[in-house]
Amino acid sequence: MREADPLTVTKRLQKRPDWPAIEAERNQLIKDARAKGMLRPEAQQWAYSELERRYPPEHTVSASSFPNLENTTPEPQSSGVTGLGDLPDDWPSLPANASLASEVQWVSANRLRVRDGEGVDLSRALSPAPSHAALSWLETSILFPSKFADVAVKVTATQQDEQEHVRREKLQIQEIRDLLAEMVEEGDLE
Image (cartoon, rainbow, N blue to C red; front, side):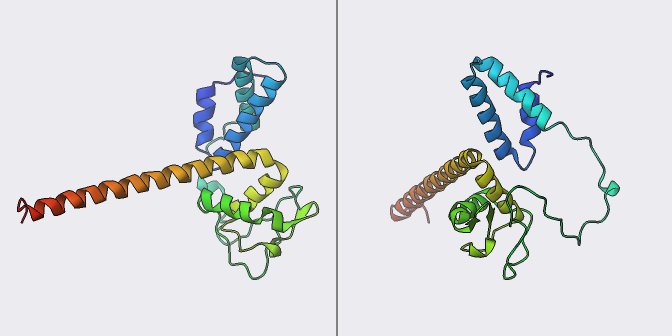
């Protein structure tokens, strides 16, 4: 296996929409290699080489080389989880993607409800999926629960960071308002 440059591989893969899942996969590869006795540097090198093999660089292709796919519905691929392509009739047309947080939240809320043997019954979901990507995350949560758990933890942490940032901004705005009100009272501002 050819040695891959970790920085180059990371930068390239971070541009992909499925980076969170790939990142979780990378972490699991390193963990598995360490469990087999590899030292950290060689475990990391092996993991990046494996990612390079699994996700090779794509060649640039112009959009004109594809047929017009605007009004076509993609055929569901066989995934090992049956029922993912059987959208209930009362669901609206789903967009390709939504925010990662909303997709992960939907999967977390519905995963246990929709399980049906080896597949899923989407009609038992609490609400329609926010996107087709959410159905992919549902598949990931079933086939690779630890990967999904890693992504869910990161999304939750990011949301908490954003909420804390908003809270601090609101406090700063209130402090400015209080200072301005005090200045108006003292006649410094008119």
